[in-house]
Length: 193
Image (cartoon, rainbow, N blue to C red; front, side, top):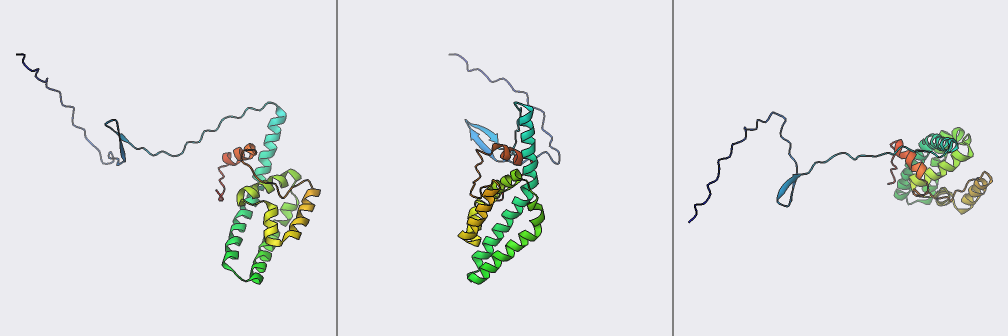
């Protein structure tokens, strides 16, 4: 009979000396009999360097970036004020009080931004309409119709059409990739998301 092989003695590793802050508690997952630690990392955002076909494309993108960053505070405020108004209207059942709330909201917005919004260019107005839709989830036309009625919405839409705007225009992130990229670079996320 053959003698069973005797195991060779294994050198013991040096004892591990842990310091005061060397212990990290983490969750583990068993995968194929091995323990794998879960390590939670912050989200990694990868931004590609944009290459433009021509200088005209670069200039157009820079103009759009300027316009987006200029009107973004107005769209942000409009979204916040619209959500607050919706909460207030939901808490008030009286039609007269609701009308007063809408009128006071309109007055507040006009007082704050009347001069600045009147001085926007046509392209800045278009970007503002898109960003308000992105921020609130409603077109500008739907918001006016909801708050002020169908006739006022029609009048506002008619005036907007004279200046080349469309209050019924919706925001589609797939079609507005440049605006989405500009907002991502600025670190802005909608509170509507």
